[in-house]
Image (cartoon, rainbow, N blue to C red):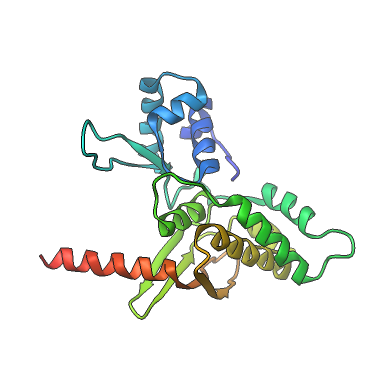
Length: 236
């Protein structure tokens, strides 16, 4: 995702910009120690920068419970992060992907979706201790879609995408861009949860956003079970 900056932005500081970029590329939570090792910096200094990013609404911090020892801070890009104060925009990445998708003689939408599916498989994060549904959510967040998760007890999981990071290119050729994105979504599912079916993909106006991804199968079952368990916990 792009990282536009202004002098007063948290991302105007180079180390914070690097940390945000690393978290965006990982597409999963990472500990303070892992991030410090990647940037070859001391964890204490990295923690200060991460706290500044959290105050700016760009990252979130969780402290998973552990059987022993002090809980570790785990960081990831915030679902509604707006680097530079603007909704995320990924047109630079998209330009490369479209160049890969629309090769000479293969401009039809079927070829575009097939290329998108391959890209989606490459984008899927590995491991990180997350469930399959959490990995899907984290990937959509890191790509700048600002997803809202909606669970239907009947067995459907919907992601409402509150930002279109590809909006600048969508305005030029929405059928191609949205077809590429649908293929990317299928590719993510291939890697994250092959037992999940994409049953609906509803594009919207790129400036208003609100595109819908509708899923059934393993991810939806996981989300329904989590929602049910949370409901029972609230009653107790």
